Length: 86
Image (cartoon, rainbow, N blue to C red; front, side, top):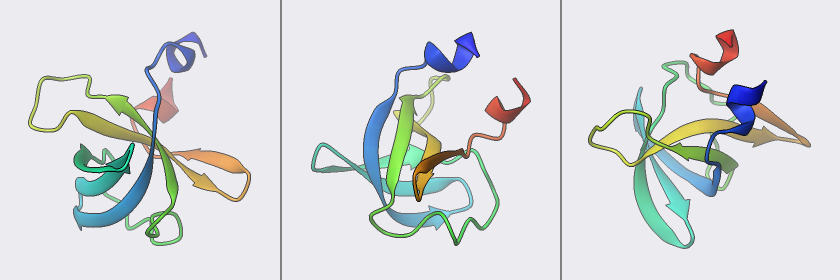
């Protein structure tokens, strides 16, 4: 569990999904693009305004943020499919 606690966590809001791996998020009032490492539909989780936890991207790529988790009721649901195996 130490890997999860060492991640930089940034709070944001989900705005819209562009494709399977890309979405618009709002961070501190500004719109940004974020990598979504989960190709699932996630219709029950990714609604406009849903609180998200994001991390800075692990790899130097096109997008500065990676979606880590989404808030569902009182819990965080991890969306980064690579992290669920740790």
